[in-house]
Length: 174
Ligand SMILES: NC(=O)c1ccc[n+]([C@@H]2O[C@H](COP(=O)([O-])OP(=O)(O)OC[C@H]3O[C@@H](n4cnc5c(N)ncnc54)[C@H](OP(=O)(O)O)[C@@H]3O)[C@@H](O)[C@H]2O)c1
Image 1 (cartoon, rainbow, N blue to C red):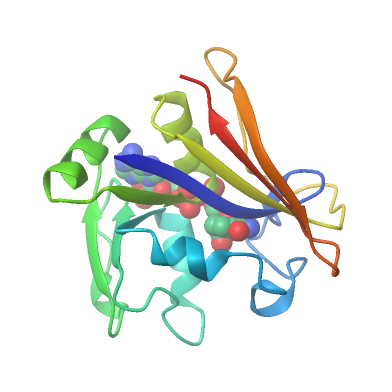
Image 2: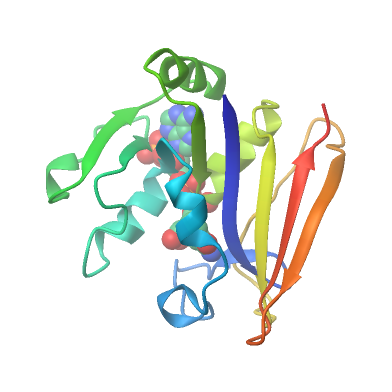
């Protein structure tokens, strides 16, 4: 099982404004920077409830028929999703990964700040692909948070794009 993060941030490390606005990110995901190829390699997407609520408000469900797992400790109205494959789970990240592995998933895409932080703290993320958008927003929802200890990373590759996007891939050291 591989667990990956693929996310866009401001240069100062925020994934959304405090109110959840994503207006500082390039419209439509910006110039192609490997998202479609990454998505094609993923068996299931694990998102936090806040991210789920954000994507529900998009004009169309962005994940097609890919399996999506929404994490929340309370009931979530999944019926609002039309045309998607969505289920809900809750609990320690290790249990969620074990359940998904047992059901055949080999590559998970974990998304949402709090959710990513929980999986990182549990030592369950192997790959971080972070695309920095050339803007400082000063305040917002951070990608990263506190950790019980340092997490060493190996830099795999960094690519720059004409629009100013800079995508870096890291592998979490064992
Ligand atoms: N820049 C980007 O590329 C990007 C990508 C993704 C998201 N975003 C944005 O970033 C913001 C994300 O917000 P966020 O960091 O506050 O939240 P989040 O990770 O999307 O959602 C957090 C919620 O997920 C639930 N959750 C997480 N782990 C859980 C677990 N192990 N078991 C049960 N429930 C669990 C909890 O819901 P309950 O409180 O219901 O229990 C928690 O409050 C949103 O505005 C989103 O649109 C941006």
